[in-house]
Length: 137
Image (tube, rainbow, N blue to C red):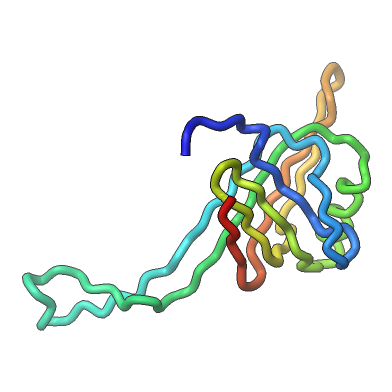
């Protein structure tokens, strides 16, 4: 994967539960991270005293974060609704020249900020809430 434009990493939300995905408005910076817990099965018999991990065990998770300018668009309202109602709809993350990650996420944080001589901004955080799928591009 060569160098890519950061603006091409898109976060989309299912607007109504029917698979109608729209890019979240106003995002300027986005990030997705994947995590896997390890299960340590090291024992006195472990070769050379090296740590051993149990393959395929432990939990997996993903988190999405983003920041941008407040646009007062339909996706802004949808993000607020999801936060206050605690829903876990499908989201898509388009990673340029890599693939599409899709699955349920919960909006775990929204922050709004602004100064008297600047634009209103927001930051949002999401946590995976179920199995994710990946489709290579």
